[in-house]
Length: 459
Image (tube, rainbow, N blue to C red; front, side):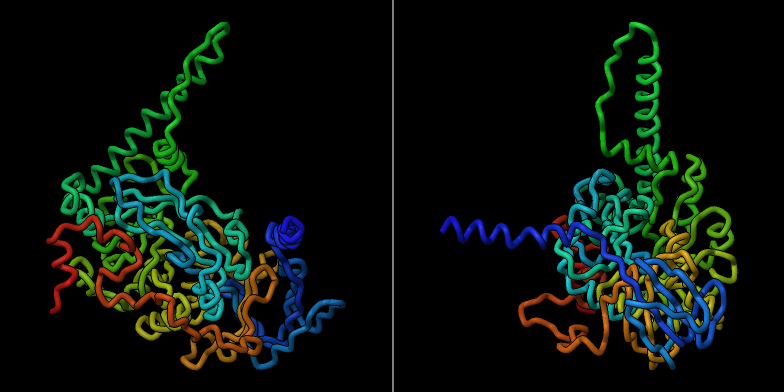
């Protein structure tokens, strides 16, 4: 029995070593119609990838000892990026307090989530795995590269990506706390007060450490250090510009209010998510934020989302707001190129503007645009091949690469894992009502009977 156990341990060693590495690949893709997004369209063009990096873009390129793919008649575009997702997360909401900035989504990443593979089958190579919207200031998010197949969550982390955190405005935090538990915030002004109070506490916390460090420099002094507080330290890092805020929001008045609050504290690294009424405050979003991440045409699933328009993404783009289309759904994530196509259909954006909504623009909002989001020499080789132009309704992803490694090939998908559903697996529904929305996953325990009755309302 002991020998069997030892053999089992030894058999695990190569696996442990392999999952500790971040794999990179080399490949030569020839004769593709290359949609660079930032440098125009290049017909019959080759892209050479070496060790996970785009080495050369040109014609008649050659290479030895690496896979060569004939992409004649195919379209090559950058890997799609979802700026607002909850894919691969075991938990979404730490809904126990108005501020929970100490929790980290990196602690609950499930690398076995089949949603990662389905996202790859939709050409999505990076997702921003976010905390939910139950708190005015929620947890810290994690940017994931879809390196599906590893059992180690850390293999999915895009370690070069800046830190980000989730904020939320409006009905969600007020319903969970003010109406659900009887504590602040109960109103939109309460949400703003929670954020402002948090920032003020962080200023005092920073000052206590500054005073301590100053006292250390005095000869012979032995000052007592302040007590470390992860929650306040995170808020202090926001004030120092080290963390990007991604804020759940819908209404123009609350968006404008948070812009003013952030301006008051000198915070400029902020992206607004959903932003259905963003078109009303587009100039302010362009002037003071890192942009808006919106739905193409989703609204009216609760009261604060009744006022919206499918022209939102186009209006924001035309007003110089860095705009992206997000999924907030394990299902919608694999149709993001269709969602971007809707924005083009309504708003008459150019192909390049439309593709930017799901590539370089979300990359800018996540602080990773110097590494991904377009096909340029020196960038990381996150790529997807389509059979048609990706904005065509007939487009189907054929192959998806992350760091030059092919993680999806439609011809090698014998079991058609894009479609296969286990009889025992819970499949995330499209949110036909607010209760199914991933942003509020796991918080129904905190609702009062009023909230439950609201959700169970049948008409």
